[in-house]
Image 1 (spheres, rainbow, N blue to C red):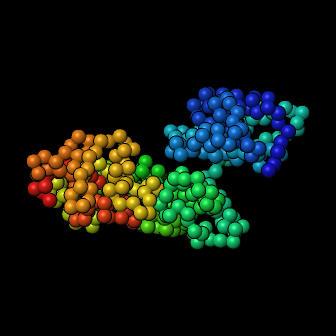
Image 2 (cartoon, one colour):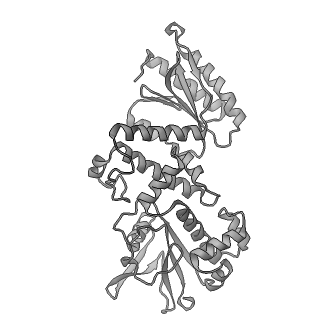
Image 3 (cartoon, rainbow, N blue to C red):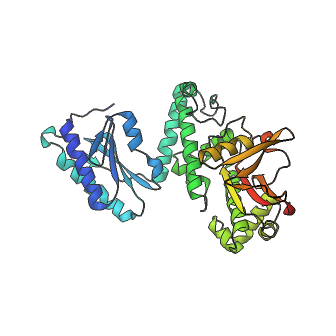
Length: 373
């Protein structure tokens, strides 16, 4: 690792300068150096745990990364929150940052700092992909051919043993896939493409597509469409929004295409679905993430979701299977209303505790009248 003769006071002055830049420009900015320092809000963080906690890029929807060099050697990166910031302001920030960094470094050290143009999203994607290739090359394995000790669906935090079994590339794979799922969740009401998500998580589209299928056992586009149609089902049942507005609100530019996808997923047109489900009173939507385990059933992921979100539920055995009859205070009423569940927008006939979650995208619990079933 490259090291430079900067003293603690130099880092302190630099941290204050970066903080001053943030306050003046209203652009949240941090500086990470290759010698293991994070400069943020006027503070210096050197402990890896503190750096990870304070360098949470997942909370930023858009950010710009400026490479920084000292005497032509790579030193670190300045990272700016680019939400609601024009490209012109980002461009002007480069020279501003370069000037303030050079001002605080002792001239006797004879070090020239250069701040380079911000990396484009496709450049970041290729850098991350190159890192994945290099790790695979050094280990002699294709990262997709390595045994995934997560059993395809376990969270890396499930146990210390699981963490110890993860290789570096597997760890990266899990983090990238988790970031992709989070991004999809935040932007599910927009038009989402494989290329867009791949750029956000710094992977090539083909690699993201492969690990999506390998780990989740569902195609990327099917996952996206199942999530969108689940939202549409809820809106059609619980609101009187025109179908064209529902289509637009989940990222479909053409209502005809939305209707085609909707009917393929549910077996009904949007208008037919609304007519048949006018008695729906409440919907809980549970979206697939990496906390779904390989051996989970619909009942398992549902009860975990209710507990995590502090939603009261009650179940009782029926024909030897647990049956959920009360969620959030809504319970079976006189035998003609109650809870049903759908899987990828279709209603199964088997008990929730007997259906595996493998290959699924979304589960919904619906409180409705049994007369319409």
